[in-house]
Image (cartoon, rainbow, N blue to C red; front, side, top):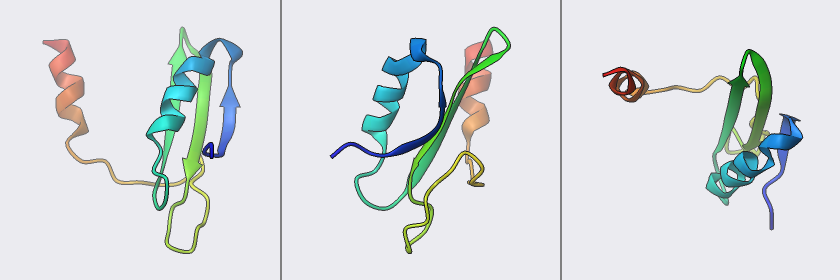
Length: 77
């Protein structure tokens, strides 16, 4: 069964969103993805759940991010 997503998708980025959908948890948990290409938002989608009661994970759901700057900083070296 395909994971339901909400949000915006430019048709040229369907493959990226298909890959994102395959990474979503099958049960609990959720995620969102935003891509800005040449100054334009081309993808802003979310899927899954944000809590145990099944509340949908949306593009406005706040989530924690640990050690993400290391990967970004390493691309600059």
